[in-house]
Length: 528
Image (cartoon, rainbow, N blue to C red):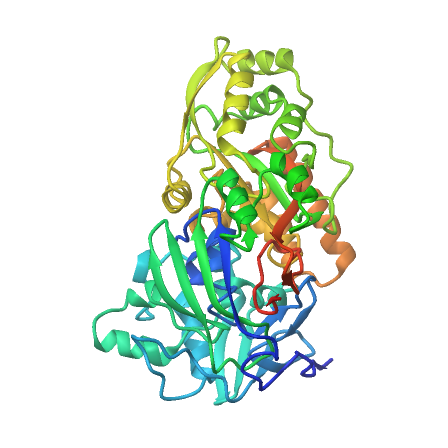
């Protein structure tokens, strides 16, 4: 069957809406680890890169997981589901910046350049910035894609090795943003290839201007942007790690949007007539990863003991202020194929002690735990949660040293497996179970760096890999339910919570929609 998706994305030739252009200050909770979305997996970095600077061939419709055209106007899928042919939008301009002036429009060579940087090890930019592509490799996109063909300047074809039920949704994810091949050629000639990831050039609504580390990022509206948009002329990220300070800045008007508000501040925000507070069920999970490559977490009994030792309900009450539910699966309950039949580990000091004794640790042991340095929807206060976990584990004889790093360092060290226990979490990127089970727990994700437990179980991996290439939704569901059962028995994580997401902004901010995939989208915002 041949499927053709017609161009229906909102398009406008207007440089701005009729509303007067405005500045918008966004209080961000942390600093980005890179300005290239190919290199990041965290929401903090994605908001500062993919959501402002870049476009993809396809995108998710704001507020949903429906796939719509973006830099591609349409696509055809072959009957055997092995060939995807994208027709590209004409007249799209790359950013003109103080360090780059494009001489041509976006075309098919930019698509090949962008994907092959991640896919082909001999690509001249593959090893730049470390050559680590957690999403692309963790989701085994390199195995999925057989080749990419330029059919003409505005038509590009992806040939797959096997059918992949997740392919189109994956193409809409931030790591598939389109870079400029012409900019890359200029940087190669100047021997400045690393600038690709620190001085970005895209086709998105906002043009990068400057970054003062851990302080502020500045963007201006792209005067040649191809699509419809709101009236923000200047976008400023005020990096403000403390949630209480973000709240104060929002109240005083220093920022118009406070990301990741503290749960304790929500009631006051809701009462403030100058503010708008939105909420929605998050497509997320917060967890404690147990590094199975380090003793004693290579022992299943120890991992199960830690699961019994942690009082998750107390964290829901103290950390989330009740705005979350206890997690028993790595999938959130709002996603299809979630298995409600799974039984969680009950909180039991006695069972935890018995398992430790059976494992050969009757007196417990000493270890370390890394606590999240930034507020995330799945864990709004890593330090406080760490202290509660530390106290719980002490009751069963496990002495825990708490430590942390700045956010980019935390992510880098965690991907390398330097931790023993690690607070982490995830907000789904495409609404597919594969984005949780394979990206976070698959064997391919161990090497890629997104599998923080470093756990590779062959039965689990076979289930998620088979599900990915299976197009029958019932068969995919059955495989994912099998995978969840294996995960729970093997306990590479302690699943903690699925949280409610809150967004707080000034009353005059209009057009914002909560993204089920966890991003903050600025394209259609209007400041009254």
